[in-house]
Length: 631
Image (tube, rainbow, N blue to C red; front, side):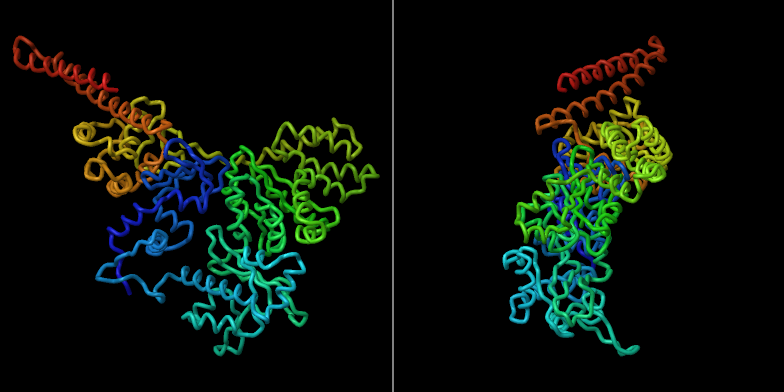
């Protein structure tokens, strides 16, 4: 096997990779000051963006949960890969050829990480299925697509393919590409049969239309297959089973195609099937996605909120459901998750029960757009659905309906809308508004007994995260002006190391810090030396290596917090001012020490010492005035 990747190559990959471009594949980032970007943290569920990326220093930091790192650790954590695999993936991304210790040339195909092998197998299968759709044997599949209004261009756009009839067509193809049966068993594309140890694998998908299911980065991780032939005894739709790649509760079909538009338009449309996603996109609703054989749940919401930048400044989630009982049940399940969103949630139900695919076939693209535009608030749908379960012609039925629907009204987040819906509910029930409002108020009080969601601290905090990520050091008091200034000086030194050249480095290195945590970071900077001043990425990495382990999250935080400037000239002025204040503070401390010495000195007994201290005090004052003048 190949040896370890050479350290200098790891540094080169880290330096040459744009961390913002990588993070953008998972999180919607917005500008947050000059050279800084922020979005919803991919590592924990939050309502306000506190995840900050600073490309200049090559790091990210969440001011809510404390998660931090560089581009390599980000890929490790989000793609669940080893350090070795993450470096190789990033190197391939920028076309950089890695070198290995002991003259190795890197892993061959047999040595690639298991996850990458699985992804490669899915990519080969994806290409195979798409090619098969054009063969004579796939006529039934092409007829199915044509019958639902999809031409060849649509099939190509969504990567639709065909699994040939036969037990081992795909199996032979992948074996021919060098994949072992042991590897293929892990893909979910094959089933096993036969007695005991004699079990053999065979194609899971046979004689079916195939849709590739891709993750947010665009990698194929599974497949959905639609039955075409009457003699197929399997279910109408057959998906990849759970694998190390494919977790149905974390997958949204079409997310790779829709993610950019979702982020741009702040809209997410959730439909029920693959053909519905196709119909929506072809009709101009390019924010449509679908779950894969499961209800829209908490893990799906995390994906959606990150793309929507779900921070309370707009955005909408629209669910489309059939008008039947199953569709209503699905809508109510979605409403149960509504409180996880800051965005407004809506439901769009076609009165005839037609799904977007059927609607497009019958009435064209505009009908699909009209369906989405006809959306109504999900809580209104939930209220009306609860009323349908009761006989409103009786007193008992109305009371029971009020008891069920009042908590729904109480859950409406907009306090301005809630009273209006209480009045609407009173009208639907035929009951006094006061009585309904009281019931809603009681339901709201009961709901308030639950713990409110955590609100993440923003990146502008002046102290360490409240979670206490540096337990071996006292948290600096944010009200202490000296601690605040010292923190600002460290932010400047980490993010703009070029400011520390020459004499400035000598002054910075000699500075003393009052706050123990900040002094430890300063010590790490001095241990790193000025040699990396022109390379912020390596500079921060070196400081991270030198600082005590409990303080590494603090260094990451200091390296990414946005500096208060809107342009390069402003950054330069701010940095000079902060460093001047630091140096002035050091001069003030030295002056105070010398003044104390002078006051304790007997001038008549030590005239030379008295004159020396006075000269030094005079020089320090001139230096202090010069700093102020320069600033």
